[in-house]
Length: 124
Image (cartoon, rainbow, N blue to C red):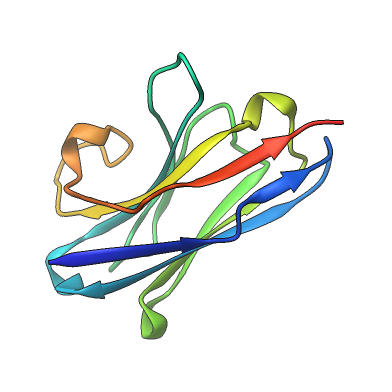
């Protein structure tokens, strides 16, 4: 019922920047959070950043705090992840997610809608 289309992935050198975009369509009014997760091979899925749609209140994992910024354009139903000062350990498949939850939006189990993922590779 909610579709999430992602763009903006790619390869970048350490210290570089990328911006990911996620456009939602369908029953977007059913969600109160939008979020970004990432998963590297052999590792668990990690909640990176989330934003409360109505309040605009962001939350971040400690590993990206101060480097990544989540934002939204509500008119376009689009959420962004601005990634600066990228490190090799940021390399992962990045997934856009949304849903309704009164619990931790950085816990994947609490969100229902998922995008297809986009690869981010940081290497020299």
